[in-house]
Length: 375
Image (cartoon, rainbow, N blue to C red; front, side, top):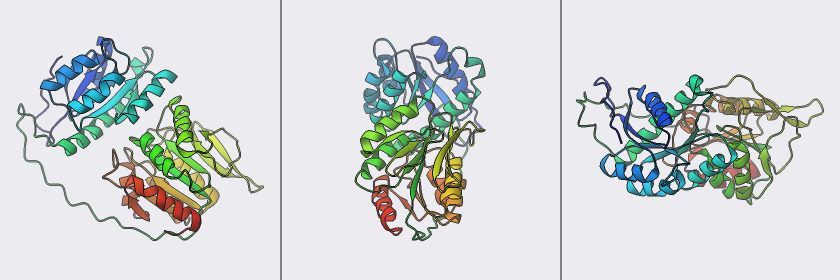
């Protein structure tokens, strides 16, 4: 266990305190360097296994734990519920290499209370790990602020803090009436916290609308295939990664495959087909939500019901503007039930949403709008 040097005194925010748990000294060193490069993050502790992490957590409160899966003494999946119980409100990010087994374990960890996951670069990719650094740092900061809001934590006593400015009040959310058009398709975008939110939403839609459902969740390859299996069980309908060129069918759930944007196009004969591509990432993501939403607005016009769930950043906000401009209806998840209110908050800020709701209230509204076009 090691302590980090204090942060700069210029920051007005208390640092996000992170713990790194990984059995590899090389990986611990890499993660320390990446996280320590951001002035808003303080690496407060590091441990080589889950048991050592539990011991460290007794004396060093942290906001975020970056947790490896495969470790001696106590592995990450065993340690996860114990860490969550030892520090209520702490946010755990699972860090794993990109294999099917690790993807399955990571999604299981999300079901057990982990907030998010990152895929560690391989040894050959470490030198060019800029994308991994950006993803890791952004997730640790966003989840750390969430942890601080949940449990409350004063600034570190080792720092002299300038007065924290009082943030201006958030502008009220403007809602618009649903279009009244019965949608032909349902489109869902999500990111951090999304896998569990999607399971909750699709479980609520199990006996509801039969329109095709298109989902873009920010996820790497392998993870999206396993997510599709989870959603198939939750929804009771056919769910799978989309295939380039396949025809859109009623009652199916299509998930954008990792590393591919998913779009839908209308053929000259009036059919609808899925197109996958490796176009440039948008919002640093591929798949991204905006390309899917844009294509659905172009293909279906106003017959789209769009839902933006929990996630970092603002992917989807531009796309739902186009959905609304075409006459479609937009719903966003509320802040209280979002792991991170980035994407749904950005969608809500556009003023085109017809509702901003707690997660469990979204499925009943989607069912009503899908049936009639009205709430």
